[in-house]
Image 1 (tube, helix red, strand yellow):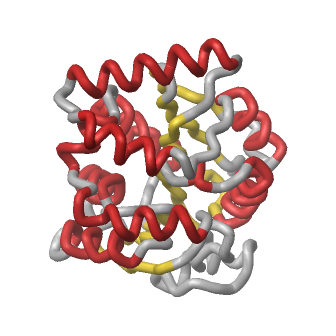
Image 2 (image 1 turned 90 degrees about the vertical axis):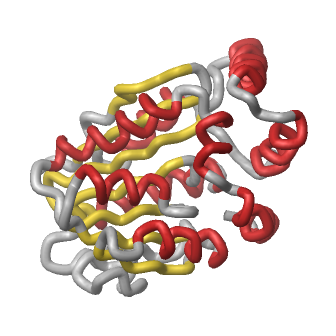
Amino acid sequence: MTDNARAVFQAHAGSYADDLRRRLIPPFDAFYGTAVGALGAAGEVRRVLDLGAGTGLLSGMVAAARPGVALTLVDGAPAMLDQARERLAGVADATFVVGDLRDPLPDASGAGAAGGGAGATGADGWDAVVSALAIHHLDDAGKRDLFTRVHAALRPGGVFVNAEQVLGRTPAIQAGYRAWHRASSAALGTTPEEWAASEERMAHDVWAPVGDQIAWLEAAGFPDADAPFRDHCFAVLVARKPG
């Protein structure tokens, strides 16, 4: 995440409510439901790392679906993590790390303590690494690097789930996706002011096509990467580390 993007999300944290996200993400239930359901590919899930966790929306859903899971949430905006603490208080075993997606990933054996380098995974590594609407803050080289580090941080058989906004394959397709997104959000009640604020945040995004991201995941060591969910500019990418 760039410094400008971090400042924007720090400033918008107080208005980043769940009901607004339901309106800005038209396929909300299927999008997040697919992401949480994809954890089943890892089998037993005890330790989950949430990258770009924001207000803890995805982590909260993971905790509800996987009682007893230990969560480590990483985000560059402390104000976002403050909201995540409130959401998860008394609900889940959660550790909160202020950090950038370009930083070394937290060690799975250290209860969320950051450090140890890209390959430091403790005894087993993470059972799952998840992310929602965050990795697009990295440029494409940064995404490829992160995918490689995630692969190293997962235990054998662990799963990487990335719920993302993605780029259309051609400019014409992308224009259609953008028009659909705006119209669908408006139909759900998003005001012009809310859409304008969303566009301010999206100005910091670097989206990539699904096909490119699957190829990068394969290059990172995930031979069976796929996108089990896709609706216009929203997709869920799932990649399991061979076990």
